[in-house]
Length: 482
Image (cartoon, rainbow, N blue to C red; front, side):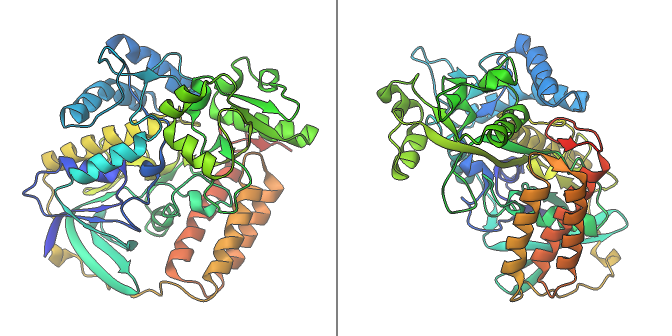
């Protein structure tokens, strides 16, 4: 049996693509863990969109400035221009965003935006609400606990996907393959990502000679709750600072204005680096203050953050909460054309965080990520329907190999990898540390490891190599020069 589409990933990009593929097509979605375990589900702040035609040039300008003008300008223009109809289509399909008392859409502001243009749902549960909406409107089959471990490629055509389901391996064929697997936060010791985001597909890209771009461009979210024992740290949304929360040291000093005129609302890379630098120089702890909020209004606007932080022992908005930056988002990934096709391929697409369209440049503008998943999934589906490409399965004559999923040493290697990446390819980088980290990764690769850890290591190696190659600091990539 040949599917019309196999989609790898069940976040906003994968599920929106599935929603837009006609119901009469044979579609299979491979979901690595449970359907809710994705970055989309955890996204708090909201989804950015140009408010109207007049706002498009401003949204483009803000995106380019946040991205250190390293963005592909035509991709940014496409994103912003398409944002209004994409959001309108989603609302017409039944998605509900928060409204003002007069029934108009309630836009809020986040860092580096020049105006209010962030839509939210259920206060601070925008990602969750979009995710649930897309799941409810998915007419196609989803297999959970299905982990892609190979792509069946010959002559720039992707014939299918091989995946693990538990320890069993299966290979399936499709006319179109869409990679929507997300980023690689789990290769870092401290991150805000779903544990599903571990970079296996980026590792596969290395193996299969798919083009990767800007892998060194990794964004660190500045306001992540400090002090919990698990790797995935509770995020304190950018929207909090957009609506009045501010950053202080233990003496209640607002030090960020010493680093940037916009203080807390400077681009994320600047805020993260400033916190890192200030703590290193002074030894003082850093906190997020909510003193500008009234309790009832805070609970109403940020109900989930309120409950989550309360469960950890903090009484908001009366207490300052200890924070530090953590890995948040990968601007780089599998290089695609603006229609979603992986460069050089006829039927292989990459959308969402796993892809690099150039839209984010060197630093993603807050809340442009959900928008990217929405916009480029739609474009990729439209392209695939227009191209109507069909594989001829008889042309794929390569051997389908069997892989060992896991070995005894895997957990130790994963933990070691996360420490190496945090210490060497974190907020501030040094060439000597990056070189040492590459040597360590090469040592890990010599061990008796499972397929999935092997792919993680290849992803990490690509991040390190890209970071070494870019000798000058740019956006989120900050390297100490010799």
